[in-house]
Image 1: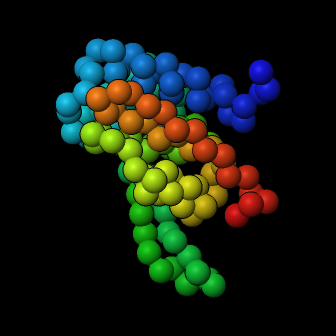
Image 2: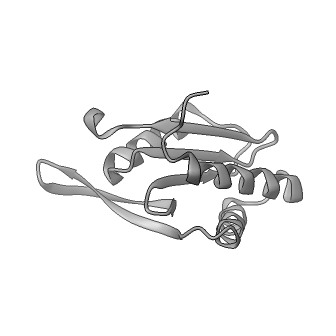
Length: 127
């Protein structure tokens, strides 16, 4: 299996996601899941920032703002969803957040009826 970019960070994120889903299952709103992931990652010794603000810039002008759910070790962007089903818009949102943040690796953690993880890579040469 080839080495995945930032696998040293994504592996404990995925472990935390699996642990939390096993403990809680489906049914809570997004906020408790996000906070639970923060606790798990902190216990694993990782640096986690919540609700990280980013500007969306066009031709040097700020045209919008958004907040990433989590940024782990300043290298991996994490979006948490607690909906019945993921949509293509959720995955596009993750890619757009990667573009705006200039981070290269993003994870979408879905605490739905069936747990799901989407991993996306957007290298700097593709921005």
